[in-house]
Image 1 (cartoon, one colour):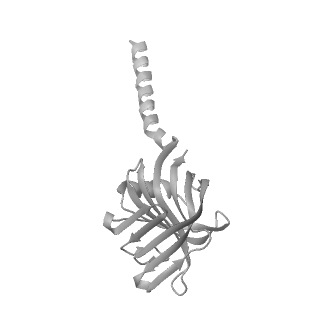
Image 2: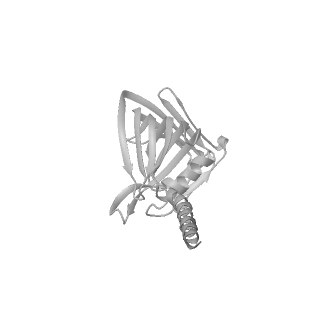
Image 3: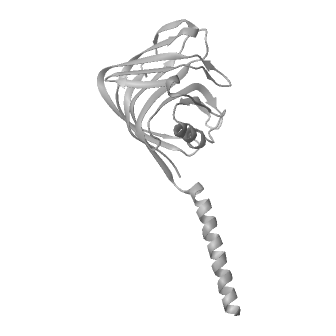
Length: 221
């Protein structure tokens, strides 16, 4: 009888440990997400008398773990003390896909040094990104407001030129997230339209691009 009680106690403790481990394991397990963008553009906008330079990256995801969706990332040039240097730090992201919004807030940008990233979930008609051959277009219909800047509604047009370029990137973020992706694209001319600023003209520099991001992987372990 005594042996039976001891055996049952050991079994109970083992089951309790197993359940606890199952609950805790996901937080420590390696997690990888996949997406594919069939059109993206990136440009630095520096318009005198409005605000500091901003970098805008737009994407249209045609497939992946989070499905179809449009995505806009707004970054500013900031000094990040933990890194000891200036970097283009993300201030806000805008998307029309709830899964992408949650993924960005709870995974990609969580725990980064600096101010929290503003995540805006909008309707499909409020953000559109699309590509036709070597042209990428994007517009957003509501202001993007962060604690330090406000970007009014606007429109971007990227027109690729020159020879095709292929690149492989690996970005290891300070919060432990690693982003790996390949691109096929072109250098680009960018045009920005902003009625609130009464601006219509060329923006960007030699870093302006339009491309297709192939097989992007975001992981954390």
